[in-house]
Amino acid sequence: MSKNCRILDLIRRNRTPLENHLIDGLIDGRVSRRDFVRHGSLLGLSLPLLGRIGMAAGFGAAPSLARAAGAPGATIRVGSSVPAAAIDPVTIADAGGLVVMQQVAEFLCVDGPDLVLKPALAESWKPNADGTVWTFKLRKGVKFHSGGEMKAEDVVASIDRLADPANSSNALSVFNGILKKGATRKVDDYTVEFHLDAANGNFPYMVSSDNYNAVIIPASYKGGYEQSFDGTGPFKLEKYTAKVGASFVRNEDYWGEKALPERTEFTFFTDIQPQILALQGGQIDIINQMPVLAGVGLLNDPNVDIISLKSVAHQQLHMQCDSDPFKDPRVRRAIALSIDRKKLVAGLMKGRAQEGNDSPFAAVYPSTDPSVPQREQDIAQAKQLMEAAGAGKGFKVTLTTERYLEIPEYAQLIQNWVKEIGIELELNILDQGAYYGDAVFGKSNWLDSVMGITDYGHRGVPNVYLAAPLKSDGTWNAAHFKNKDYDQLATSYIAALDLEAQKATAGKIQKLLLEETPVIFGYFYDYLTATAKGVAGVQPTAMSQLFLEKASKA
Image 1 (tube, rainbow, N blue to C red):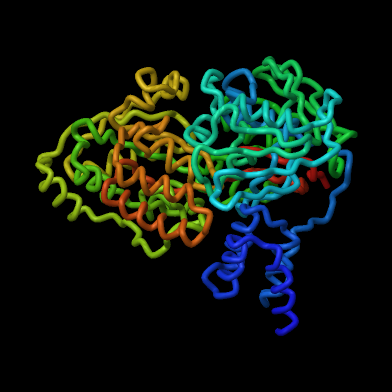
Image 2 (image 1 turned 90 degrees about the vertical axis):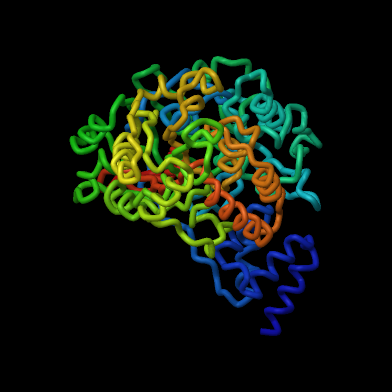
């Protein structure tokens, strides 16, 4: 043990106070091994170093993530949804488009299913003392498919495009209030500094695969991405046909290990059922995202493997806090208490989900405070709250939502449950285009409906969920929730660099949102990818990305 202490002392000498505080948490038992690795990667500590610290602290070697390499040379065939619009890194917002873009373009770092950040185009990163400036060191010798070397000016230009409100960037939901255009600065050819609007303890996730728009493309990019598909990735575009599909070939000049597959093919489908038939019929090898209800027949198919990732993807049920009948938080709590979350998980989601507790803090987040009691169905209490709010006789209201995944069935379950407390719910289920509209207030059924259900994809940290739909100035605040105490707590959480400080603030947020209930988080669903038997090395993410460079076929 003395030798281990000496090793720890040597490691500590070159660490910052913040890093040493995390090490203390591991040694004292306040931070688990899993959370230590995850948070250490966020602070920019390398995985080998985190492994050495863990061993020196008496936890033994970290489990190996290495996999046996499959046979090279395969053609991997993928079924995915049709891209909803022209593919452009600045504006892309749908699964069908981003999975295609991600085949050719890469991120500074990658957020895995374990929420651990791994280096990609950046080799390392580090915050200053208060988390207002993050410095990233770039990998040398990385070439774009068009031939030029990726350098700091490409990173600056890529992130500035996303942070510029004039570009209608989809990533403004991430960067709003965090990073302005011009705040990404070149230090030298291989060093970039991000000067933030305010301290941010989770910032590396904002420029990782967790922010699916944040791919690095040439500084010279002026639009028309479908004509070039220029990037640094392990695959290069062979052919793209809008609404039909795309194919890619191995990039022989890739900076890292060469991809195993020789080619990948993507076929676009307008519905899930044809994808299921194509997988069962041998026309495709992978369904990128398989909804539980539509794909229930595949869950026990012996010719199909299911890759299941715990995720924080969810369906937010918002209620406008400044409109009748939802001005009184007791009415909102009553609706939340009418919902049977255990039935949602077991029945609606066939066990492929975890109960939500009406805040963004899912159980998988290390910063979630597990001591906050789980909200359960309680019809008697819900009726008492309705009476106290002067709504004991019930009311009629319209629930507007989208036809996507299991949302229509979820809406029907809510419709039945709230009947028990006197609420008559009329369902208005729209196609996705009509529901989202222009995605701005005044021009969107999503943002303008008194009550609605909206699909939210996975994020490795809760920052976007805390800000965009819940802060007073949130770009997606469909609930019209304005609460100064909440805004201060969310700002405090986002600024915290220390995991324990994050958890303490998270607990306060969880309790406040249970009291106010502007949004019901009923469940967090698992992300499912289906593959044909014999297909190995497929690495999906719950962000709808699909890493295929290690894929092979038996």
